[in-house]
Image (tube, rainbow, N blue to C red; front, side, top):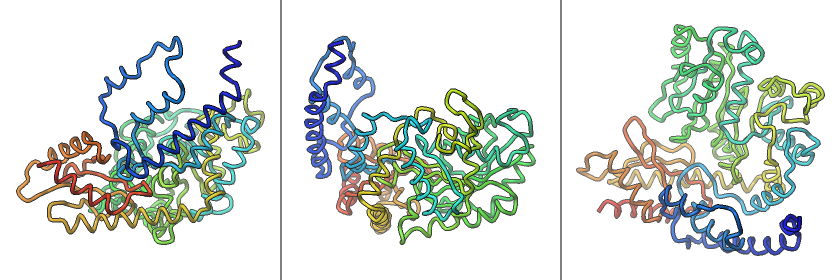
Length: 473
């Protein structure tokens, strides 16, 4: 047992802790100044696996050396020229909270295992619901990511709107179900309905306009198509905003359709729900207060480490219906009577103290920091779009609504534009000057940037366009 005692030695922990905080602080400074070697160090998956191959039979290096290797070979989200996926550069304070949560390891299936985190989560749910304009009876839970959140919301919608108890009797107990969703809904919506056993036809697509927003006028036709196929539609899933282009669906008009047809309205606000904090941009979410459920990711536009997502219900009673089963070894009474045992309302049993990070950040920084950050990134996207529009060799896919900008390099006389964009991205990643991604839209392949790093500036985006031009010479 001497080795166990050594592994838990507080003094060794203190020494490692002091060193790793110094390492991370130095790394943070280098990343924010753009002084790391590459935004994404070039690597081959097979070579990376070999590089980290180990038998784990004996210690091979010191902790400090291990951390340096991890830092050097990782994707550097704090670099101002990280403009890739919708994963933010988290607040340093949140990283410290991760350390606290990891050491305490208070899981949250039952209140007894996570009393502080449960209280924090409940108060955060109330705060977020209030921001959205939900009534006092609203409630919800935190889940590990938007995919789990969307599944949770749709399970609740099924219990509320299906004419049979699918949780008890199975989906074969009634007619096949379906939801209506934008052509540009996140893939996890299709995955969720197939997990629930509805098959590929469980999502009926609704056409979008030129700005990739759901056409509310197309909902009646989509409903008729679903009914003609023998499907009972129970819900509409709206984007706020879409992953590919950052487009916000017209929530008020969609809510009107749902009210007229007794359908559940679920808003996938994983990325865009945070806009509610911005006085300048909250109008993009007009109508969200009428939704039955909303998913809101804190690890996108609230500067939190992954994963922390809220599933919010306008009528809090529905938050107990997604997972309507008993587990006597955990829950003594009904879920509603023991509202504080959140495991009855989530996919996860062992759930991390996700609320600690967000609660601490809001308490110590205040919500104004996040409102200013959201406004600034949305503003930056609009300035970048102006620059693209004025550049004769670039093409803007759509006017950005959020902080996602899709564009492509299209110099005069260029052919095979799809192949050109793919070649540009490969070259940019190979040199490591930026990290950006790509998406396929009806017009073809476009380069896609998410301006999510609070330190990305206009000069960085000017440099991005220059790098693209150089990449194809």
